Amino acid sequence: MAERKPTNQGACNLVGSDGKSLTSLEMAETFSLAFHRQLNSNEDITPTEHPDYIAKPTHENLLGTFQITPAMVLAKLGRLASGKSPGCDGIRPSVLKQCSESLCQPLSDLFQHSLDVGKLPCEWKRAILSPIFKGGDRQNVTSYRPVALLPVVSKILESLIDDHMRKYFDGTNLLHEAQHGFRRGRSCVTNLLLAWNDWTLSWDKKVPAHVIFLDFAKAFDTVHHGLLLHKIGKAGVSGALLAWLKDYLGEREFCTKVNRIRSSWHTSASGVPQGSILGPLMFLIFINDLPPQLNCSALLYADDVKIWRAINSSEDSDRLQADLQTLGNWALANGMPFNLKKCKVVQLHSGRSQSVNYTLGGQNLSCVPSERDLGLILTEKLDTSGNYSRDVAKAYATLHFMHRQLGALTPELFLRLYKAYVRPHLEVHNIIAPPLLKRDANILESVQRRATKWVIGLRNKSYEERLKKLGLFTLSYRRHRGDLITVYKILNDQAHPNKSILPLSDYRLPRGNPLRIAHQRPKTRVRSHFFSLRVCRLWNALPAAVTTAPSLEIFKRKLDNHAEMQGLCLNGLSS
Picture (tube, rainbow, N blue to C red):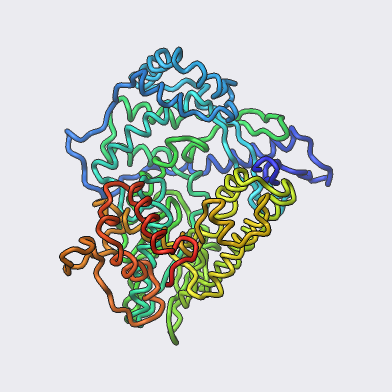
């Protein structure tokens, strides 16, 4: 299925200054020079002493080297995806996986030596870049982004070090709570739940809220290595491990491949390594000192930053502007400029509201009626209905592509393809923005209704019969099921980032649900449909045997059994 879909790979036909098409080698060199400029943009920045915005670790908490065992390497080898391409060393993951028991000992010795001496083989620091079209003019090299292919062996060592470092950063809570990207237990959903809780609360109080979305220009490619190592050291990483990370970042090279033709090799002196395992964590460490400097509300998802404040008076907008100035100063000091054309302001209000102009870097930011936030459209009226038409269009496009390519499907093949490629489009906004109108819910359900008719032997059966035969639930029930699963996860994880939005009730029934959610009294329809209010009645109505399940899998099974007894799995639930 994925192999038959058109992709954005390939550089198409770049044209030279004489108007003639470039050869594959010429295109590869053109892209390499463009990527070289992009990956060497911060060479002239001098690292400066930055304030410590995280608690300085004690000597006992410093993170140094660790012991790499054959068992650790064997586990990593066993999880390799055999079909992946090799890096510049030509070693395929399938070979490593098939010979894992023979290779785990020598590889662990090699990895340990690399870590102890603080050196990485030069071959492991070489990447093959492929230009991927991201939109715009196909003749312009800036319309392409690089995707890197690294040696598989080096990525195994990276993965072991990444595990070690993440355990340290998670255990010491050094990463700021506002960051939701590249972290276990955090996601776009946890980020959006916190933001929408704040925004709907302001809406309920009839207080405008001004939200500013900030976009860095090529954030991952402009990370200054000296500043990054400075911040890693400040966080408590020391000794041989810090020396290894310094060598890991230094003297990296890349070539660009177009139509199987490679360019010459170029150096990269800035940015976290493309396609690496350690790159995401390194970026989180680099940007970690940004949110503590702000006085307004702020949330991050990797390099996606949004800040906001409830505007009760002109003083509040002045404070928000002051935080923008702080952001501008941070960007300047860290050599990570903003793309001002993509920085937007959405001013949330239920009635008339005086517009405020915000500036960054001496330029006015565009004030827009709507903006996409982590895939979800945020409008100034907090109206989510605009998301469904786009989601349904994507689902239908994928469904019709499947039908054209494969025709009628067996139940087994249909379920694999439908669950992987179609249904996710219909459920991507379920937690934050489920359909409020029956019309919108029916439009979403119609996709599954039509899809199940294309299964061999089911066309003339009713929708309920088709669902039973395929073992599927209605999308309506799945939305409520997803809500309740999210509640279970939040209530059963003391460190869950959304814990604050689901306060428990002090009221207890003698034989009822012991984990009842506190009832809130909203004043507006917008607030009443927010997650924490929407789930209250459904969750509190569940029996204790379901809500107190000892594990998530047992909870899901008990929830589905309870819903089936109530006749809700195929008919849906009333909102």
